[in-house]
Structure formats: structure tokens, C-alpha cells
Image (cartoon, rainbow, N blue to C red; front, side, top):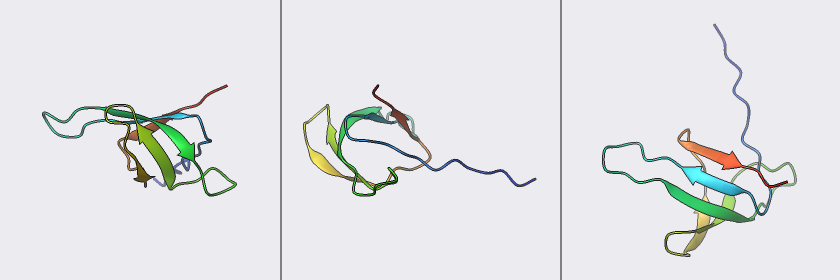
Length: 69
């Protein structure tokens, strides 16, 4: 059975959450500060809450977006 996967879309100000995938990993939470593609597709520039580091993220399957209104 073919399953269609919905592409991740985000906008500046959305929260991005990366779940830990291994025992002992922690959840990382950040705010998206830049989205270079008009359609909202990755990669995203993210400022991480835990250390205020800003970097580029190509999200994996353990990542989800909490959109702002």
C-alpha cells in the first residue's frame, strides 16, 4: 500500500520540536527565525531555547512543527 507523506511546512515564529530518538536523548525546542523557501519547506534557521544557538535545520522524521496563529 502506497502512503502519501505530507511535506513539512513552517513560517517564521513557529516552534519546532525535535524528539529524542535514543534512551537518554532529550527533546530540543526552538523558534524558526528564517524560512528561505516561499512554500515553507525546509531547511529552516532555528534559534534553540536551551542554548540560544542559531543554526540551519533539515528536519527528520522525529521533528514536528507547532504553528503560530
